[in-house]
Amino acid sequence: MDSAARRVLHENFALIRDLQKDDPIYVLSREKSVDFMRRHGSRIGRDPIIAVHDMQALIKGGTSGFHGFRLSLGLLRTPEQALMGLQAFARFLVEHRHSSDLEADIRTRLRREGFAGAIEIAMHHEAREIGE
Amino acid sequence: MFDRVTEVISLVLGALAIGYLVYEIDRRQRKLHDIWDVLDGEDALITDSLEDMVESGELRPFAGAALA
Image (cartoon, rainbow over all chains, first blue to last red; front, side, top):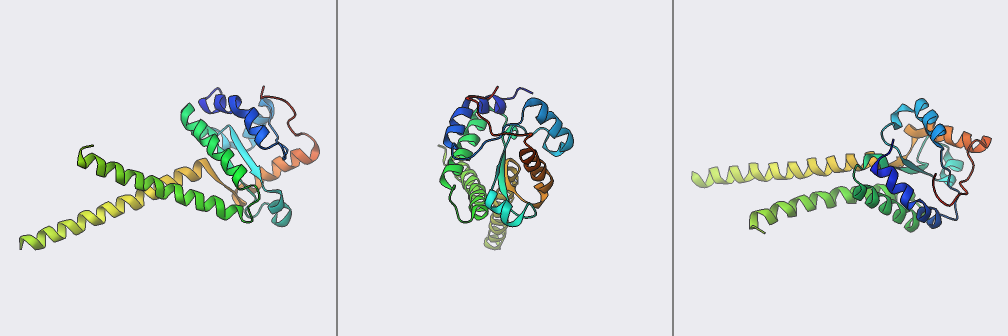
């Protein structure tokens, strides 16, 4: 299904690939994607999905605990949202490539985004009252 | 008497404002988790499927210049 997220990923894929040239990237073909979604229906509607597997975590502890992270780009509906999401994801990948605790970095980032959003709401309400 | 009522109203409004902020933080974090989250035990089956595809050779590293 053609979506804003899919178009944004296609347009920026070459750059993402170049930023991650030290690690292999695997892309499921359309046929493989459809077959995969049939077996894992929970992912339908969230694609395109970018999953990053932390090989060190996988080798150390398997898949029962933390072993990577994923971006469900398909949940971002507009091209602007999809591009911002992809850029943030790429930036995170580059900045935290050698992180000693990737899981903590991700959870800290998500917590911070939640707080930042709430502060933004509070400031917006205050500005409206002042009449700006 | 009027001061007391005003004080109570202020407290209630303050509590509502804080409650709304807490709700909004939680809502945004849940939405973010939906979009961007860690892979853990809940994703084990999917990760194992993908890793099996790589190990079997069904999935190979992308070597193209752009997506088809």
